[in-house]
Image 1 (tube, helix red, strand yellow):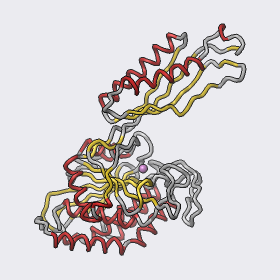
Image 2 (cartoon, rainbow, N blue to C red; image 1 turned 90 degrees about the horizontal axis):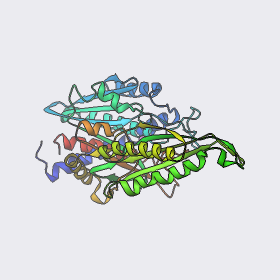
Image 3 (cartoon, rainbow, N blue to C red; image 1 turned 45 degrees about the horizontal axis):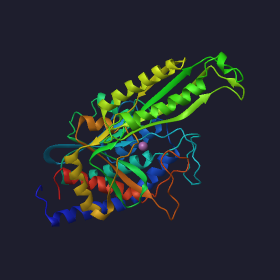
Image 4 (cartoon, helix red, strand yellow; image 1 turned 60 degrees about the vertical axis):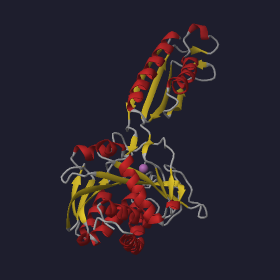
Length: 405
Ligand code: NI
């Protein structure tokens, strides 16, 4: 079974495609069920129960992990030590849905605005497909339904700490994410460095407030902060290697003075992102040092707080290249789109540090139907035809990696 021939590859592809097509309605219904009842990170109680109930229905063995997480195992009948883990995240976001759809969120202020409903429904589809073929393949498939991707410190770390990648030990990990910039029917891929680390930076600048007409009698934290914001941009333009993508953005600036009142304090909050852990640590020190020196030099005082988020995400070159080849077999090279580095952050990054892993993007865009909203927006939605490809492609690549076709 491990000697792939064009004939057997075609046969496998056609069987998986037919199985995925047959599950289209089921996956759509599951996705809508999840979409209508979104739950916040680490509170996915109903979602977790739904996943378990689906798995029970097909007699797939599962175990609870990391609170609301679920790990299911499908053991092929043939003899093989190979183990592949497939991961879906299951949590939603604190966003009020603005879509006019029959399955609109009923949990006020909570929404599946990052497509984790699609990831979950798709992985359930993969489970259904592979379970139907279990007597015909060799090897083991672990399905990881992971809680809390959207909230630091993230559920991936908890899954790993709880031994989710062991017993049986997963050799590799595969995960997908919906992408509204990619048309439905296409996939986005990149091997090597792919996504950024993300850290939260909070700086409080203290001065001495007073009347706007008498600035010389106080210490103006507004002017100090403006200077600091400009100076901090040098970190990216002058201290970062030109070969290493880095972003430093401050989206919050709060000075509670008034037209004629200089406040005592100014607060800024922002994010630092890059793809190199050593530079990340150095940058944190430089931000701290620059803020303290500059603010003190201008007569004020400051407090810098840096909260580390997820590390950068690096796809394995070899495993990734193999997956891309399987994707191309499944949908044709024209539908597999090479991607640039993406400065968003994902806790799938933790799996990439443990095992050769591959994270790729599933196109969900449909311009004609005006399905174009970005992730994390109140009007985010997907072309649900993506489910059929999402599940079929993952099931196919899984079996190919296990040595079939
Ligand atoms: Ni997401």
